[in-house]
Image (cartoon, rainbow over all chains, first blue to last red; front, top):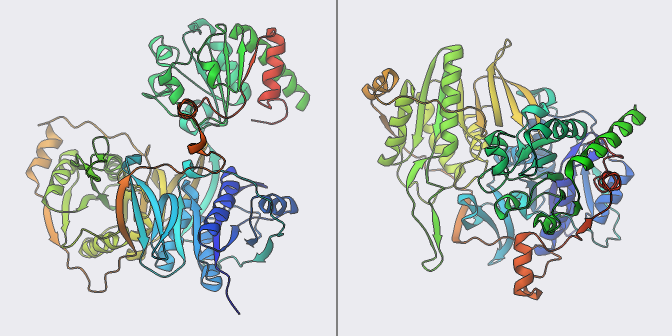
Length: 328
Length: 279
């Protein structure tokens, strides 16, 4: 029997949902499988409802190694389980997203299997029929081409900026293969999972951020803070906002401040200077409210509102209040 | 508690550059890896909280001694430079093996390293070092406390403000993430500085085992090239469109709304899905 080479991607889940990186890693498995003529597969540690399988099929996965668990697991246990499955199934590649959890698990699996772990990779190729990983060094100033000197599996972490989600036409329903959970007792026990209070959360970690600029007066900040509280956002702003004392320096967004990577950014009274815009390039959805219709921020915003931001936000706060009351 | 802070010497990541004409990295000035400052401070704070001894360790040639002198000035009890021949052309795994062998004569409860270095940023050192020392490890840690049960309580940083608290048996290896501490200011020629000035950096020659394994090999170093993502055919774009893409103006459909504030608020609610999801 000819063994089909497989590319495994570790898929992160949270509760009963797949994280964005899981979908991107499914795309990455498909991409790497195309380069190395292999079958794309996912490794998942959660219950696997039909909608997960449907979704991962649409991103090109043809096989799913699943450890059905509904409790959060320590990275040590996950890594030991993947290690055992890899020894059993002999995949060609095992890929991990370069997040703190996946990179931790990837490094553990690599050390356990006595393999190199190349991370954060931006691309893969072959040279003299051997796989080569491309990774950025010195914060992206140069790239290094690195080869594994050991036999497969080849382990790598994929840089988040290289990841993308792309659906493909895939008629192959992913085959689900159950893998056992490692019975070894962990030396690194998970006690609890929690979230940092929004008032202390760093802008780079925020899911929702609100930016204030020159168009915001210090007296208007309570309205902004009320909005932040309602949408669970973190308030940041431009350099001018720092100079005006609206926000502390560590909440400055832009080339000389923080670079955001959040899902939603609401810019209030911000014209959109290039230095500020650079800091919001990676935001998934930008909404800008500015009274000046020629403000450059409207070129970058997915939704621009030409109006007095205070009036709009007051209405928005009211609508959010009603929505919260309805939900309660 | 006997703590070891593993420091790394890297080329200054702010100054290092790639010369595309010579096809090589230039302006390589050795400095302590930026995360090393926080690793050192975390070690100092732990020693102050639970007593014991803090030793700074760095693998490298004589230039690494500058880092270790700095560590002594900051208040570490001892500093050891691990020297080994043929460090070039090795990978993280082989360097971890060398450090582990160098630590064999030094007692420790906790070995601190950076979670990822500024030069390669591979996140592999804590795992590789723990594997060679046969210890448990935890990485991307932003807080370490001595727990009531045997061991330490550590807080792991996850994306979007999420954290996980673990209890880790000792001895252990911990990979420290940025934010674990704010390095202290030690006044030049102050008491702590002068105490450090009186201590010497110890040099320990590590005999590399013949079975030393290198798991990865650097084939080439070249100019940075971001991945061309599927769906964006750069060669088909005009120069104007390429500039727009770099500025983030290309791609997603943009919409400018000029209605009343009430309508605008409703539009934002729908657009940002604030009414349907609990953000």
